[in-house]
Image 1 (cartoon, rainbow, N blue to C red):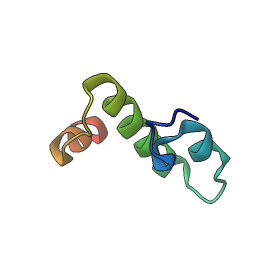
Image 2: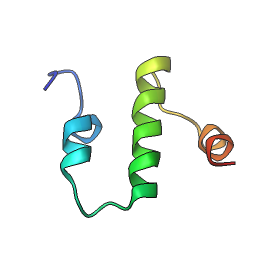
Image 3: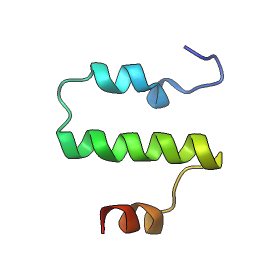
Length: 52
């Protein structure tokens, strides 16, 4: 794991969790990807637009 990456943002840790629903996993994947691309987490409005 990248030492700069928070364990909560580790995609392998997210996929290893089996107690998440598919929708929860999709939200986590969106937040992770958005954060990697834009170097900041998405605002609530960004998440709302994505789920629109």
